[in-house]
Image (cartoon, rainbow, N blue to C red; front, top):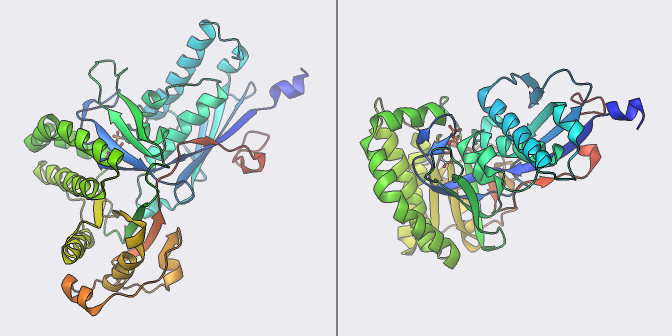
Length: 399
Ligand code: DP6
């Protein structure tokens, strides 16, 4: 190898998905290792609509590890970034010492440049840390030539990130061990399992910046006895019921558990002292609309769930999407024309009957919802083979 080619960075680009929990993770038993007080379950969203793309370059000539997020250089000494870098390098070293001949031992000492972007606006208020840390860990693993179970490392970036390491329906098993070795994500069913299931992200116009999940759940663990009850006595059986509902593709059971679990999570936020409010008046209007819609048809056709912010994520079956979207547009009239209001998977137009409008009977909230992202369950992280997609140039700096 010539001097020149040895200095050329090794560059890998990967993409990873966002996930939305239907059984919520809220509360840690170990802050540093990010070990949860209960198991959780999520649906991985399709990367055509929502994903993080990350390029990692490693080179002998880099002086230090560096990171650029959405175009801006960020502090690499951030504790959770350091955990992920350290754990991947530790794993690579272990594999090499165990005699894996596939490992290039020189690369281990190389510093890395990391560049990451989202294909959705951060302002949309969607948790980007899950996709971000999942993508970081997946890409670093490729660069350092390590394979296998990586969700335990992604978990140390952000708890929910461990679930973004798999596609489809994913559980994060809380584990029992103090060292967290058994606190891992596992696929329950692949993304192809339930093709009729559709997901709508209703991006609400945010009034204020909500309290972050990390500090929010810390205060909940310290002050909420409802959270303790939930973790010990509600979630274990709910996890089992949810897994069964997913496996049987039982929409009614899936939808009811999803809504009840979201409501209980927000109840624990209110039980936190001082209380935390993530739901806005728009969120409450969406909740009412969903329940009135289901009541009108005498069956559970639509479910909502909310994370640490006001955006509703809606689950429904393909056949109900056009009417429900039309209903959202009616009760949350916007300035934008239809094309811009709905992003992602195309939605056929539909008409809604006067009967239905009356059954809903809510006062329209103009501009309450900015836009809808229409999507479905999708696959886990993947390597982006096309070198033109690298976010770092051959010099190892952002393009
Ligand atoms: C409400 O994973 O963002 O979205 O582990 O502190 O990084 P940290 O928290 P994070 O919490 C997500 C909380 C949630 C529910 C969920 O995704 O399960």
